[in-house]
Length: 367
Image (cartoon, rainbow, N blue to C red; front, side, top):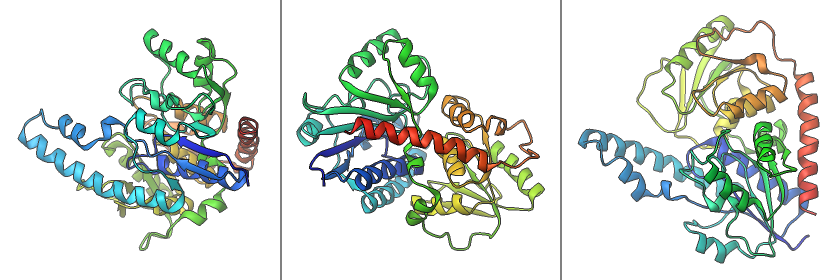
């Protein structure tokens, strides 16, 4: 067993099944294949997620809005506790870290620190350039690596680029989840950035089965609907058309409970990621606008369509293109009824090649 210690910082916090599962996949892959003494997910909680700051965000819009905000926040916190428990059951998660100073004390002397995955370098999503996600707490003797980091967008201010270039100077190896991100890094003098697959691909369909839990009462043949950052009425409408055409029931994932009635056959909400893994693995068809929804559809070899979003489409563009599935990237104004099925023998060839180079990146970076 290697005696080195590894710390991973990513966006694992919050009610997002993909964020949680990418953290589990990377940490467990490293633990199982490199036999490090410990591999810890750094439980960094940014200021925007602190309860006091979330209360401030809903306090300036009147009493009615504030009460609705409190209800939503209460539901979020209830489900988030389940997510943290699920993470701790499946990997090593540190105690909460709220500051750079605390991170330096707890993890500054780790042998390796890894930044990634998910949108850790999206300054819009993170409300600015967050030095924590650039491993600003590492000591001089720590090897700094980025694995499948995501910028989530393609434009930064000159001020942001100056900060980014400075933060990345000490990295020994950088890989990104989108080819477009690697390109813009290169254009700004940050060279030799590699493109790799999201950590969730480090586990096979068979391996993810070990992390799933059956959804009792689920229809035998169903179309799965999973969307983020929208109320989703147009997505559900499209999904229903496809379900009728294919003779399927409709099942909707709502990570946090909501009273909105979408008129589907089953809503699965306020559940832990193990049930969502099961839903993706057993779906006959998937309709999603989520990056990890697409990733799991591909990894589970499901028939699916991906829906374009108002922003952050580079993530979806990339995964659909590298897997040869650009024709299945549609808008809600289309009918989503694509005559041909996905040929997974071809997709799996592409995935196998990309996965090989992704694992080789880790092998080289962690020598």
